[in-house]
Image 1 (cartoon, rainbow, N blue to C red):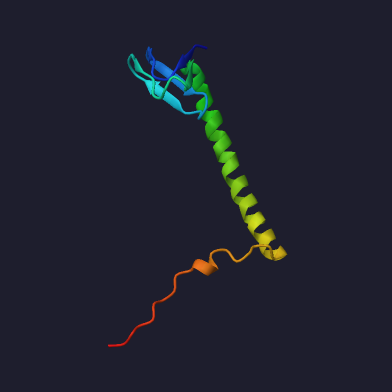
Image 2 (image 1 turned 180 degrees about the horizontal axis):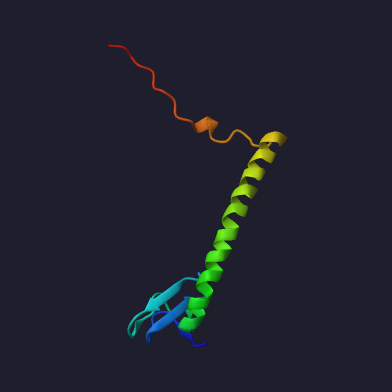
Length: 100
């Protein structure tokens, strides 16, 4: 796999930003986004095609797990009484009317 720096001119293809894991698609020859400090790896399209269902499946599995874990954490904090005051001190209050 070919490594390229941000801002360099490259051929068409799919490039993975190593830091943010964002995929950049260049349909024609062009310049990669970012500065010289950003690093990209060129990935072949069959790898992108094979990775799409894996990433989608991971999201499909992780979403309900994260939702139930967050709910269980919130319930556990409520039962333990450690939820704190939250934003009650900064809650909006109805202004007093000064009369006609």
